[in-house]
Image (cartoon, rainbow, N blue to C red):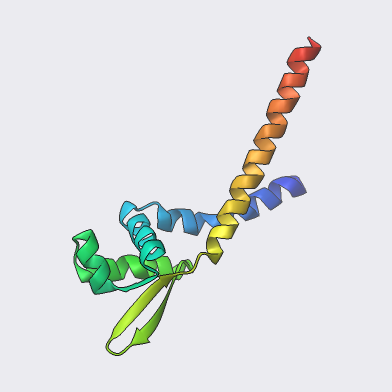
Length: 115
């Protein structure tokens, strides 16, 4: 395997858990709510999503495991907020794939024009 291919596989491997976490529509909804609200408790999120607080807590745990949410204790409740830093790895990966694709299209265009 070439060094470039190994690097691409490493980058893809780094974003795989983030894509897996965001693959669930409920977790994407939680991320959107946290973007809009800034922070929220599991109870507040469950009211918006019309699912149980326990289900929201499980989704928040999965988002937390990939670093997309952080929590802060406030009295008896945990307040959750989005940590968008891990999304920069996704953005970089998508930009890399786009750049490689555009280069391939340019080579194809050059090849077709040469014929």
